[in-house]
Image (cartoon, rainbow, N blue to C red; front, side, top):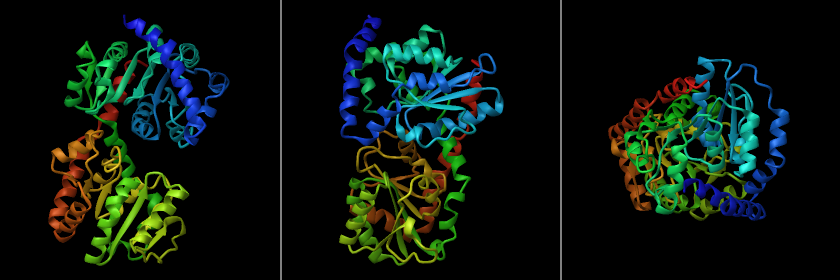
Length: 429
């Protein structure tokens, strides 16, 4: 019965998925880029992948995008430290991951994941010939899982979690997911709560191992390197200002943030909003500038900022790769996506011991829920609540300090899973 599901998937679902990608590429630049990157992908890998130097030293790690790669990076570093002969192959689904990762320590080889067809999966696994395979979080493709199982190559899912509204739990998808999870060697879940959720889909519960979330390690390690924002740290007078940072914001977030900041700026002197849109494209930055102007708030772009001349209500971060460290500058942080569709990384500000606030769209984030559970973050549902919460935090430094300290404590108590995962993987290498 379960194999029939795979046959059905290959005959009916795979062609529809490919058609969807082709049609999507006509209207979406990111999909188009990913499609182009996969042209003759098997031949590209075959010609560029170096031969195995040490028998059995290859490990294949698949990530969906750049965020998942960052979660995998501490594991890669520990593996290299524990066994320098390991050769890792990192595959990406999204161009945002592939384009932003260089082939340098700890990455040995990178490539796009081929399309999930039976023959592509068969050729890909044959060429890369890993001793063990790893999927980070959730980007699970049936033909690759099945082929690994056929070749008796252990597959391990790390940082495993299922958010409350996951389609994996729907009756229509449960059977195929049960089958795919049954083919895995182990599923390393981030918490006992996630272990309970996975038990609905995993028949052999011995495969479920609570080991923690590498996201905490990644965030902590990144917080130790502030050189990328040295210019802002040295900006004259910036430290004396009351800085609110809105990270990874979407238009829906700004619908609440901008009116709230307008009220707050008339109430508090030396208040500045550092706003980092999720995708700082020229059109998005122009849109934000227009909206701020309509609210009679002045703004500057980071790319155009001259030293000592920051004198606006808002600084727009129009460059990527800086936000995780920019949080260091804040007195209070708002995490974007939480009024849009799904919240972004709440741990990046939490590690600096800064009060964290966010909107209601946060069921996708176990980290956000964990902060709330420990009274280490504040949930807001409207512009007026944003005004009231931020006012309270600015007017009561000890109250704000308590939230910041609890947030950092949550992060530090969960650091250490990357080394445990690396030690676990070494058993197969």
